[in-house]
Amino acid sequence: MFSREYEIVRLLAHDAKRLWPDMVGELVLRAERGYGRGVADLVVLDIDHANLLERRNCGLPPARRAGEAVVLEAVIAKAGEPLETILSAIPMTRSHARRLMSQLADVGLVQVEDGAAFPAWPGAPIAARVVAIEAKLANWRGGAIQADRYLAFADEAYLAMPTERIETLLRHPDRLDGLDLGLIAVSDGECSIAVPAPVVRPRIPAVRRWLDEAEYGELIGSSRQLIRPFPAR
Image (cartoon, rainbow, N blue to C red; front, top):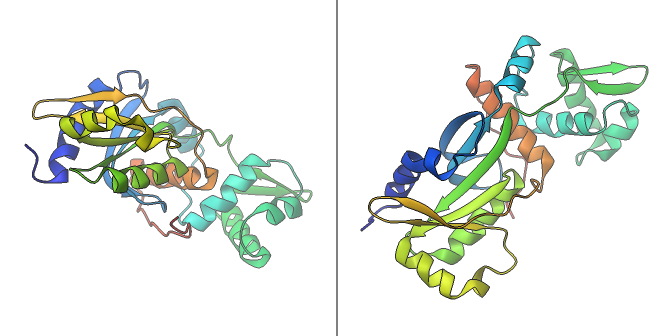
């Protein structure tokens, strides 16, 4: 039926609007896209155009590196707190965090006033919802491990496999115990969600922020520079 995983991905991309009809913004598809925690076979983005327009109207560039996104996320999460408090919460050396903070201030993404730091815009996300999918022909264990990694940045993660493989997994649901994953069955003609993925908060907000910055840069035609300081699990 399928001889290559990309054949599954192609069918998933074709059926994405039908599989996720409740996405309210612009549905954007990214194949073989990574944000520092694995490379997903397909990422489905629900782009919030109001937030995109607000960010664009501010004239602010995207963060260029993942390390900058880590610092930016800390500023957004702790907006108005003392700069030293924010710096101490960033998982990198103080000198490195301070240098990146300065770079963000230089391009206008961060404002420092009276010893406190603020984002230069409300910080609302461009990607309102993110679904990440791993496609496998047979290796469900490896696929499940990979899909689980994507929950660092995604709201939902799926393992997509040929229908007969999914039917086998459904007969042994304990195999996926402890994993917040959904299952997609793929046949020659269509895809169907066999088990809906639970909606979760991204496990690592800084990785999700990097996704948002990278995708914002791509949407406005800026060059995308992917540097991965997030170690693979």
